[in-house]
Image (cartoon, helix red, strand yellow):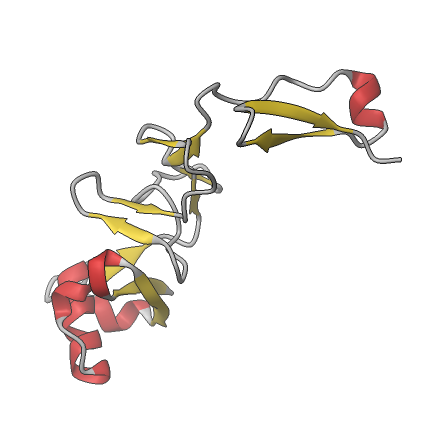
Length: 142
């Protein structure tokens, strides 16, 4: 199955549809995004350039089955399409976070949180971003 994101105003994803692979093959029998866009225009009455193919197996610019990542992230409703970088971006989690185009993710100004120690992991501790203090706070469940 092939997946296509339907773009709304300002590149916001408003829907994601599944299409049979056979419906997006060109004359040579090769999967072709343009053929898929034309198919979706005919069947959904939405301009073809506002349908962008996405990969169900791609998250944070990694293909979960070891394949080639496609467009950074699998598109979901509320994500934004970044045409310049060819990446689907999830909503920005905090105002201070910045785009990391290499990982197709939002990063804190401090980068990733520190690694948990074995003891912290054992008691199910985790780090949570503290936006007002611009810090990673260690949270330990009682």
